[in-house]
Image (cartoon, rainbow, N blue to C red; front, side):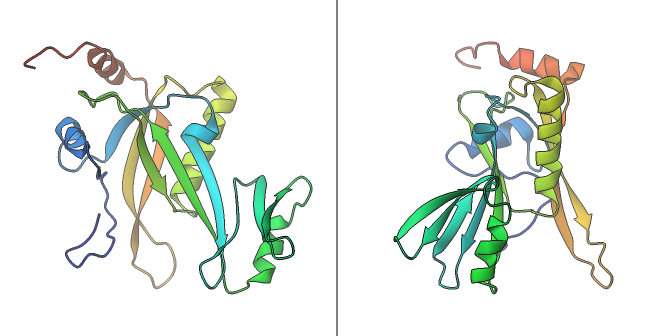
Length: 203
């Protein structure tokens, strides 16, 4: 979301964008802080993907990867060479040392279905760069749930957001933190069951 001056603005509720945002607003109202989602696959690369990116001072892509496998630009061959953390555990530090003024950027992308949204069938997407807050909250829970249950697909999760206050001395800044938790309560299960019913003409 953006302010009146066009600057990005943090919110403690979800804002849908795109062609079908109207359907999201109809399903959840003006400022929902909790929505129900379902992952269509157990493949983390498809539904909960963490991506690392490193750009130089000129904005050129130096390296990218998923945390285990990285493509790093080679000036000798003018191509991206593939490295793994198994082979080179300090590959990220090696890249950083070449450009000490630049930093790695991390993005977490979730792809999911929102059962409560009717009238269109498709996958919705949520992205965050909250490396110290939202990313570990979601990633750690996702990994732990999958490890314990052996699946994430078909399970109803609550995706919720709250506004947190900085705990650093002398700072009063606030930032949104998004969390993920499985919630197959009776209410959610009944909602999902109701949404499976076909939409009648004139509804």
